[in-house]
Length: 124
Length: 268
Image (cartoon, rainbow over all chains, first blue to last red; front, side, top):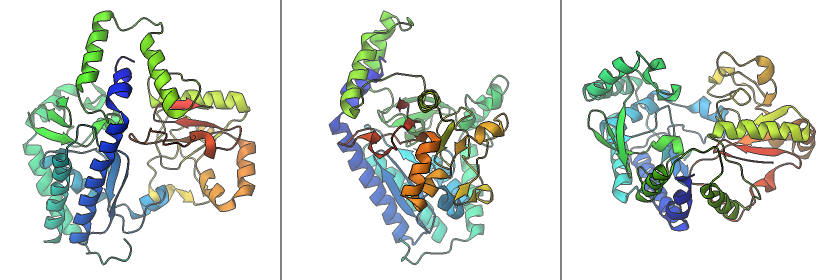
């Protein structure tokens, strides 16, 4: 409760949520641009502080469509690329990222750069 | 997105890059490897939770500040994991660190209420427009307690969950998550599959992961059947969407049905 109190009253304020949305938008735009520049299957999707890149060529609307179109090998490779390029990403296939109020634009750009490097290596 | 022409990525290329990147990560995490050898002698799987396991060894962290974390090899990374969504505040936020430090000096556990709980409840009440709050230790406890309350209140046993979603660690909801594609079942009648051993099929059968699909298909007719049968619908939400934004969270629920959020809240 001692932590929850300032978390609500001083940290997760309306202004903080606006910042989170701006960072989220920057990250989603950056990832989507990589996908389109390299003609990868998939898309970037997110809401609030959470988001992910899925390599599904079809829109994922529920677990069935997720599982039918999941590319586990590519998701595993993306995690390794992130870890080797100073991006600590959620483990597990196609898990979502979580942004914080501390993330900068440069932090988001770092994530996009690691993804871009993988896309370039895959399509070289 | 479906109108774009996409490249066909060669599986051999993915395998080649995976081998290269795996080797690079292994070579840069010798301290994690050593920690794993020690940890596995005392911790099950060498980790504090099954969600932290990884082959060939987990990456052990040492500290975090803001958006950054450092592993036991001293490597700095930008954290996009953030506790599976539970840390939108970032690590060691000064305001939270100060408050916790002050509380430590005043004592921390009394098994008695404190003003902090009242202030947090008042703020959540203001944000969500929900009248009363009860705090628990985790999202698992929240869904477990909410389901129990809903069953007592409605005198119904069946609950509905989203197929494939994680809603907590107790038997009621460890059903039909992480299921291979060939075991999902028929779309209108998804299977109620216990997640591993120790969860009786009779318990899993009380959890219906197909009702959401049937409601979409059958509309009003199935909504009525749902109302007669289900004690609760379990859902979850990600970090960052806990602002009400003017919507009443209960407005979309059938009357008499409870909601349990794996994010740590419950209402009915």
